[in-house]
Image (cartoon, rainbow, N blue to C red):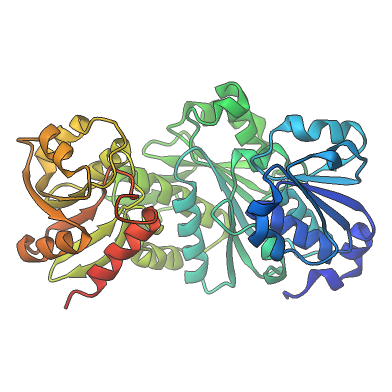
Length: 457
């Protein structure tokens, strides 16, 4: 049963009157401040940005929260609890811990609140990794919904867990995306199922070394017990090495498995129990098959029926702007990959399709060469539809790899695709460029593409 946690005596009794400092007033910090205020804590926020740049964030806070902006006098005081935002490095909050403060990130705060209330759900899974977290978490949420469970998708995917605690009860299915920054300040956090998708160099300016980064990721499993499950990538050497650090049962995913789990191939997914699932209908590419295998392994560990998994794989359309299937029109499929704002992202998108592509390229040039795309364009693309400022440079650098048509803008590109594409073709927006020459951001670019495609008669 869900409802207002702030009315529960076990929760309010713990927080009531405690001095709590939130460090950083981004989305996560604001959510933590609101939750702490509701639970009766005496809340203050310290933020490095000057006050005038925080107008909207400040308006959203309830009265009674003290805020300092542009200075950090609050960091020199004593607090019972410090809640650093994910982007705040340890150097800012370790002195507070040394003076006796508990240090919890926003994820840890929400987890402990739900645990105190007896509302941490049995059906919960937390997903981390360098790449693929958002797609895997979103697909897992779709699987939970297909199983007809009240579902909450939250965490690093965009909605702080602290903002949705009232929607979570013992019967909720919870899918969480978790970053390494969030795991730095996790201590009691304990998912029933945790998934580590991969570990590749990232955020090393924060974590120092790849080994330290990997061990931070592996904190996802530190509180798990034998009855819980760690879902690990069988292809990732660090996952295989770190496997010995978890007491939980391990379920593997990959194209080859060292133990029980979910195997993927071009023919679909399979498990040792004899279960079979088809590839996701609207989620192309080997990297996405790997993400889907991880989501299936999480669902199996929680006991989701195979039929519900199969139903979600048939209908899941991907994460907005990341190889997102829009629609099929007269046998032509349209995909929105507007988040591909660089050449490497477009390369991954091209690798996800066998061929017969009408590729929309262009936008604001970012200085990198387009020549690395030449081989893939030559093999897979029937026509390149050019938009934006970078069109002349792209055509010059990829000359001879395909036929080019300068469409000017998104309307022209969709119109050209409608006129020239045939049944069986794929029209792919994967621009390899920034969006700021014609759009506010990549989300705006993707929405405009979607609107034109959905308006096709």
